[in-house]
Amino acid sequence: MYVKNIKIRLTPFESIFISYMLENDGECNLISFHNFLLNLTNRKTKRRSLVVYIGRLRKKIIYATGYNIIKSRYKFGYYIDCI
Image (cartoon, rainbow, N blue to C red):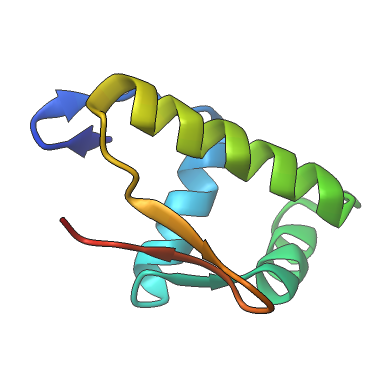
């Protein structure tokens, strides 16, 4: 993935998450993503684990670029904030 011409290497989960967000107009409801991931991988994942994985991805992007492009919205989920 590239952010402002800076390459960021993604794990398989991070790639799935970013692809899901881009397919849904830059938004991600955590419950619908949890169901999507369950159907895709046939493995149960706790929602809290998803929050941790997404938090790590957000920190990775901020550390590499200095931009906070994935933001959270209370009672909704996550969205991409274009700079």
